[in-house]
Length: 400
Image 1 (tube, rainbow, N blue to C red):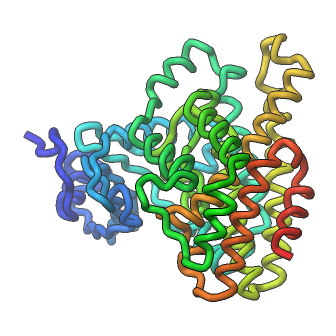
Image 2: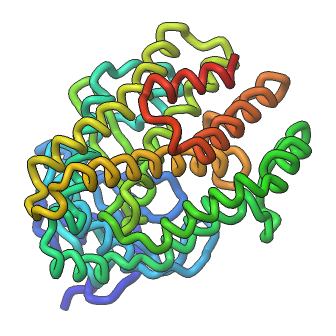
């Protein structure tokens, strides 16, 4: 009888046995090497390589406890990840790793190894330039978001998907870390450098106008089952090389506002831009990244309109006024969520390396304040900014 019929946390030897005996992905005489490649926060991720054939796969296992803190989590999150990757692979196979198996008993997801691609966050921190990124990521966003809405998907099937992607534990994390604690530090977990504590108090904690806007964005995040979203589409979930991108780690996936994914992509591009600006980074890289932010916004907007025209068939929804209003709201949401992503990564305890690893001093103080100002601008002016050029202009104005 197989030992993989009941969940346990696998060691390296267990992983070897799992991919050969259980999944039959490798022959019994394979010379397998297993190495752990996860970031150590939520799940356990193993790369398996056959030294004989060179074949390789990745095995991702969820445990009943959150790896970083020991907090209990529903292990069905891996099933949610497997299900959304399968849907997105059907929509845009060039941007998603192929899924070989999902094992419910072991809560393991086995998929294509994408070692040829590198983590976008680290690549941007190293000031690497990818001329095709805006084109690729905008194609991905337009073609996985709009097609999973009621505008395109059968309404009965879509409602079933909303049930299947109800992701209580993971959404609870975002509801706290993104939309609550940065503005209402009730758990006393925010991490703010001493020189900026008063700035945060004056401009964030006591800013009633800002908090009103954040409350609206939080409410929409929690209640608008618009499209099937990745839920955590920061630059660490995007892998890249000069040939293209691969999007991974959608364990926070749920049915929510499209702008949340778009905004996460846009928001995370401001961190390497700000760091390069305040720490005298390469000028060519800064110009490219600013242009990329502009292009991501404009190309998503343009491609959303194209997908809309190609995929929406109900005459009511073909109405020009409705289409214009609908897509304008998506882009406004995107800027608002870009703003909440920026603020929470500067104030909250789940920071990005561009901020947390920046040397302390006057540059760090100025960089954090500029990022917070940009976040506030995006949230409160999300309906007024309607072009990539205007978006970047306001960024340069703040960092001047």
